[in-house]
Image (cartoon, rainbow, N blue to C red):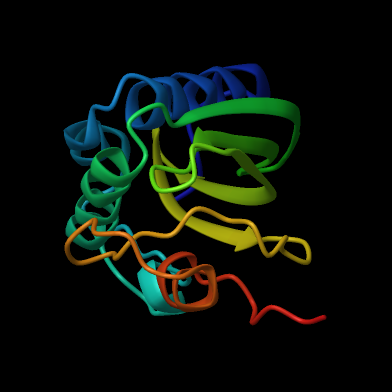
Length: 156
């Protein structure tokens, strides 16, 4: 099904979704903003998941990163898609260091909701904050980066 939203409406929708889902810590908003058959190709552990998997991932991130904030740096629309370049920032709970990672999300719309995201994250920095996707407990950076966010293995 094609989108019923204009390019500006899609951008506003994505901006509002990130504000609620990440910055306002409202994981349940995913159930309103996504299609019922939403499919995330790169969910936690770089494995496909559905709405519940992404919702659970965010709840774990809220626990591990209480000051997590996302800023959108740029957005581009074409057809039924919105490409979003963003920065995630937080304080590492074990070291108290300020952390961040930069990424891209391509959102595809159906009707007036998001049907699927596709993520591309540039080469990661070895200082990403550790957390377990299951428990929110701290883990080493080498453990957390590939498994929890679907980010490629760290390279030197």
